[in-house]
Amino acid sequence: MNAPQPSAAVAIAGMHKWYGDFHALDDINLTVKDGERLVICGPSGSGKSTLIRCVNRLERHEQGSIVVNGVDLTDDLRNIDQVRSDAGMVFQHFNLFPHLTVLENCTLAPMWVRKQSRADAEALAMQFLERVRIPEQAHKFPGQLSGGQQQRVAIARSLCMTPRIMLFDEPTSALDPEMVKEVLDTMASLAQDGMTMLCVTHEMGFARRVADRVVFMERGRIIETNTPDAFFDRPQHARTRAFLSQIVH
Image (cartoon, rainbow, N blue to C red; front, top):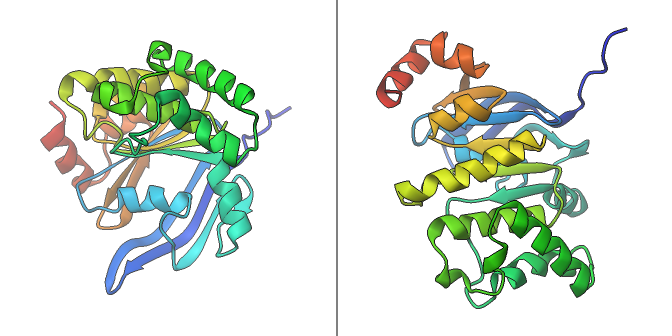
């Protein structure tokens, strides 16, 4: 008997996005299976961040379809809320509330959105702060932490909503080089647990180590999609080869 095929966590078909006359995303077709780790890379301005922001409706697409965990992303606010509750997002900048402690940052959404009790929300938050290896920072304020620690708090905060998908938009680009590894190691650990992940990053070592597939974008289009070994060792497109020659040493 054939093994059952994983269901699609994200299915994008014929998707377009414009900013005025600028065609930011041009005929995007992409399917991400449950449990799959996808890394999206490409030069600046290629549409990577716009694509990932469309997946949880931080950006509105004008044409085509985006279906996340079986929910069609339209203008229906109920659908948007459902997708956002299932898709956690970690940004370049941490976006933590500076006047709240780490624990309070992590419990705010579960208490307000999931209607959890404070005790349950705090127990869950401590579980995920343990998961990202900073439980001892729970009662500090974000300004007392390093950039790498703040980004790990941002990851824990997203996990507290128990998402089925994690979206990462260049999560290490605002960090000092010595802090990058601790965040990438945290993300790699999540990948090992089977979390569905879409990650925009320039960290090609992480892509090779963690991704199931690598997507290369140029001028709003997907130019190439392949396994990490094939992508790095046998790129099919001339533009991919030129990109890799500039960033892979």
